[in-house]
Length: 115
Image (cartoon, rainbow, N blue to C red):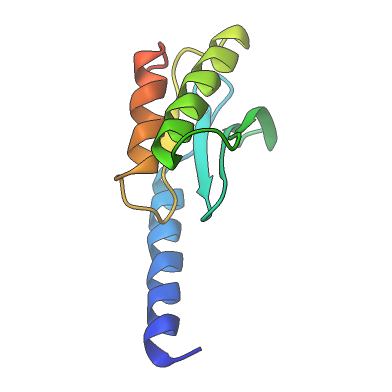
C-alpha cells in the first residue's frame, strides 16, 4: 500500500468516526447504516441503545447499481414501517451523499420513512 492509499484510508476512517460521533440510534428513531462494496449494497436499521439490528436488507443482482439501490431503499422503508418505525437517522458512514447512497436515502423517503 503506497502513501496515497494509506492517506485515503485514514481519511475515510476519520470521516466515519466524525459521523458516528454525532449519530446515535434509538428504538423510536434507529440509525440507518449503509454499507456498499463494488458488488453489493447492504442497509440496516440499528438500535444502538440495545445493540440490535431491527431490519436488514441486501440487494439482488438485477438491474444497474442505482436501480438496485432504489429497490433496497424501498424495501427498507417497507420493512421499517411494518416493524413500526416511522422516523430514523441516516448514517452514510464514510461515503459521500452521492450515487447509490443518495438513491437509497431518496427511495426510503419516498416510500414513507422520515429522516
